[in-house]
Image (cartoon, rainbow over all chains, first blue to last red; front, side, top):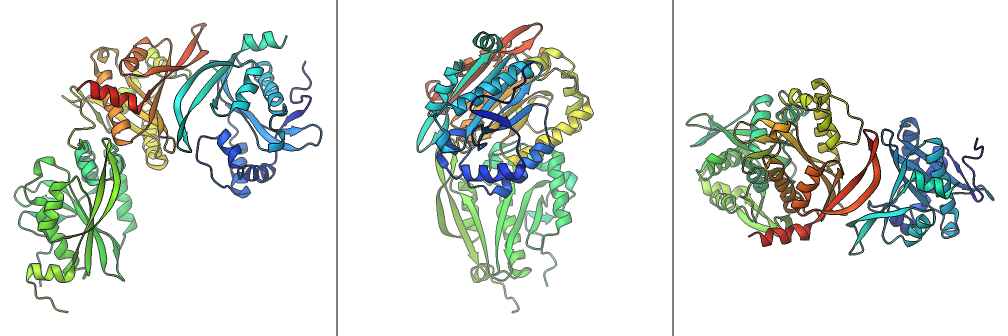
Length: 186
Length: 191
Length: 193
């Protein structure tokens, strides 16, 4: 039995008190680059109180089709982002994964990639899913490279879905099948 | 004293039951031209039930800044549309007028112009307003002509405010002042 | 401006409001046909009662009123206002001017008459000429070739194929996203004049 389901070498997956997330998230949201890499809806300033209330409600309404975690570094136990599965379709065994690293200094250092590895393991080994999908903006090159490294396969793009700074961008779709993940992780 | 405040030459202004209004509006809305001449919001096909619930809510809220009427023809009592004064600013004596003839068979027959005369009389001699405003899309030529006939003056345009069928249109603002209406009607009002 | 060209009326069918009295029973019958449900939805097929559907209609109008990212229509025969299906533009993202489109004809006897084509044409005009959207997406399982053909004929292009995303009847199926851009729709309108 896998004992360390939530733990990797650099990070661990956790669940936070609503106030903790509130404070971090509202700070991260002030970095518009962070926001625009992760979200298709317009950037806006959010108070930590608003986020806290939203998280409280989410935790109360805990739905059976989503699994959200925060990402903490093992070394300093620092809260650096979040990762999760949602849109779980149990009858088909599929789900969407999403990740965002809010603390800039942890970009491009492998923390995100490891968090993704952990959530995929959770999806395939604990939830017994058959495939995991993700979508990512075409201008988020760092993320796309990270997903390719974990063996996500490109499955197509929705053209011109996003409009920012006067230009249109595609939404790239990638997916990984259970058999593909198993053969990578034997 | 004028007892015929709600009566014109072709139409009269009435109040109606929410259930009838729900059915009528839901049916009129299915003509997209009606909604696109009247409203800048994308036309939605609300059910009779939903529309009825909004009218019931209006009754409960008893808004003292709006005066809504329905329009019936005098000849055959047909319910053809609505007219009203909204957003009354009592301290300034100003209000916005809006009219919609939902029954397209009744377009171009003078009903709208007649209803407008009745509501102007209501606004100036019952509510004692100083001016009445309206906004109309520049592609609604029939309405603009009707408002000019009723005595409204062009006051301005909000340029390219409307985007439909691939092209842009202006919202035209028109207004009529109390003194202009007086002259038009040769009315002697007590002050 | 084509203000006098009706948004809601086609040759044989029209887009119409929900009739809370009449529609629930008819739609409840459709949901007892598992094929109908499976062609449209990824959720486990489950028939609905008229009472459940009435609640659903209220929720639809509530969402339409409050969220402003949904435009829901019933599809009816012009001749007798008979309910034959539904059509919707949903998950609209205004800042990006994009949204999703779906339609369904409930009774198999009403299919294959071109009503789907007429409905889709009205939906596309509404999306592009009234809502001014930039693009539309349709999400269709690979086992629904009729829908795939309907949307392809209207100019939609396959953009994403989520491999083996569905599991039904003991085998896996792809889920396909088709997309259509406003300029592509414009070009097709221009060339068909």
